[in-house]
Amino acid sequence: MDGGETAKQCILREAEEEINIKIEPEDIKVTHVMHCCEPDREYIDVYLKADKWRGEITNKEPEKCDEIKWYSIDKLPDNVVPKVRNALYNAQNGIFYSEFGWQN
Image (cartoon, rainbow, N blue to C red; front, side):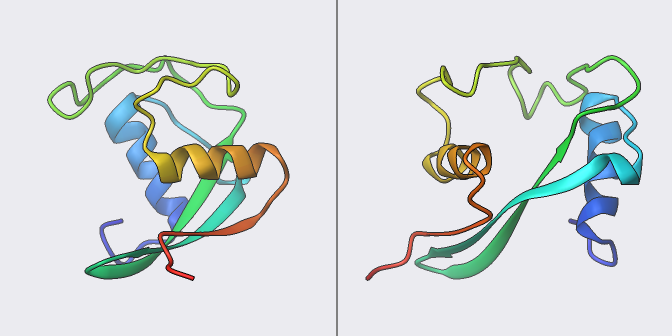
């Protein structure tokens, strides 16, 4: 987020800047919230989903991303970041909130 924008405003902007699609605000829904802890910071990730958009998905930032490819949720590549894999599993299974990186 650039600051001064909501999570929805951020995803609308990023979708257009990074993958060349336009999403309507009403087509976005929150699927998961994750409270994360790393040694030097604590933060909250908000996972959003859009089932509809306009435009053709294109990698507009090849210097940051090698490729954009669709995968089945059951056959994700091995290199998916563990906290993202966890969030995707939770969202798929209706678990709205989770925590990652916390010591018990």
